[in-house]
Length: 315
Ligand SMILES: Cc1cc2nc3c(=O)[nH]c(=O)nc-3n(C[C@H](O)[C@H](O)[C@H](O)COP(=O)(O)OP(=O)(O)OC[C@H]3O[C@@H](n4cnc5c(N)ncnc54)[C@H](O)[C@@H]3O)c2cc1C
Image: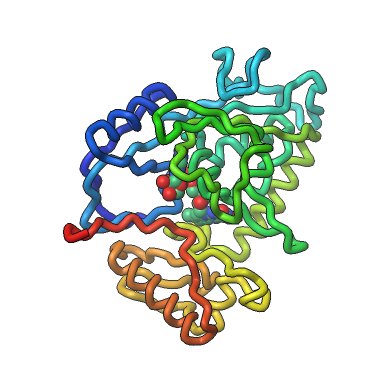
């Protein structure tokens, strides 16, 4: 969104052990750390934030799985990007179609790697910015043309988290119950994950990725500064099947602005910064749009974007 202020402490661990230690140390000093992935879904207060933010940007590595175990461990054989380049490469059936990723692995890079391997599963995530940990925490995703949902959880085999007690723990997919745009991880922090794919001819994966990107680019202002969709889609039973974007549009929200923060004319659920917006303007516009929709429909839209507001000293 390109708005907001500085944080008091920014920690940038370089591997999962440092990540865990940063979390534990922050707590020892009395701070509950916030975790920043790619920042594609957060808006940070203009006045900045007290306390500790731990960024996962340096935890970007992706591995082939180790021969022995299922956890986000590896034998150190970091992913080889020099893959066979023939367009019709068929995945070798002996390949284990999984990738082991640290939390800061960029989602667009992961999509490219999967595509280059002929691994199907992340095609629709190609236009979603951010990192693996943020994608799992948010259970990022979208809607298929038949109305069903695709989401990050579709490709997750196991997650390694740092528990509230500061220990690593592995959660297998069967024991994980994510919801729409909510990884439901409570206070657990994602340190890495194993993703499982379906091997397919590379061309098929490539074409599916292109097709989805084309469709996304046609309806969303993807090149403008935004945080993606601002609001979660409400329960279709309450909204008559209408999405948050449609409700904003029908309430006259499109084009509405506070300073340089404006609701996109292209998509009613995208709030964009047209140049010099502040977080204060973004927060105000979100409140105004929510009231607009509430007055018209009685529905209260829930924010999908995370608003990192500076706590009031009185609180
Ligand atoms: C142009 C654009 C298009 C987008 N399209 C989509 C879309 O189609 N579908 C969709 O779902 N989203 C979309 N988004 C939103 C965003 O890309 C996703 O929510 C993405 O998963 C956020 O990842 P991130 O790493 O940037 O998370 P951040 O924005 O950094 O963080 C988001 C939340 O996750 C938490 N978090 C981050 N990392 C961790 C971790 N390791 N452990 C625990 N919690 C963590 C943060 O504390 C925060 O609460 C879009 C955004 C933009 C700007």
